[in-house]
Length: 235
Image 1 (cartoon, rainbow, N blue to C red):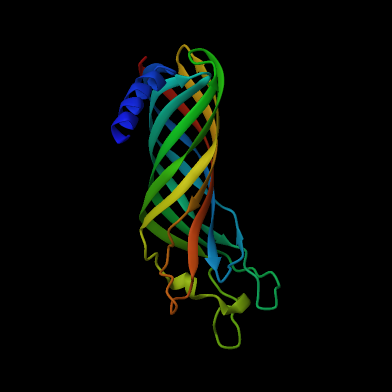
Image 2 (cartoon, rainbow, N blue to C red):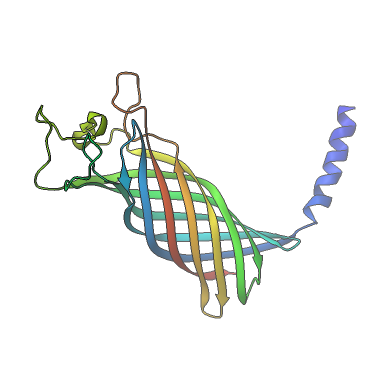
């Protein structure tokens, strides 16, 4: 029975491979845009959205058109400034003039599956993109107000007494995440122009999360909006 199953499977695979129309299009390009980020802390730290730039290089390989769906793999090498900006309130939940932001510069490499529908050579198309993303922290710096509002013990006056994060450098420089989003693209005679919106959920913590550590959770949560230009180097 096992031999029969192998023979049947071997006969079926070529037939299945013929369903799609093979493509060998390779496109190269670059992108730039904005990342909006916060860090999910536990215990919670109240935040505003931290914004920063992103830019990078893109390579896309279109492998197949399956019915009306164009299937491609896309890899990017991006720079992005992530971090968090605190919405600082007192232990009595009153707004304070204190300010604090942590800026973190990352090298980020998403490996994406891209499924698109629409015009292939000239005209508009829409795409769904998703896949894993890997990052490495290149540098970090803090930006804070000159003076802190202190409590009776001389510590920053914060809800739940949470102020340890100000003096904690990132412990885990390597980051990994999952990302997904939508893209609108127009193909023209001089190249492809696309607008992407993505959400990336970090799976790694910035700080150690053991029982004796300050935070049990400290991962990135990122929205990216960017424009890209690509040109076909092989059609």
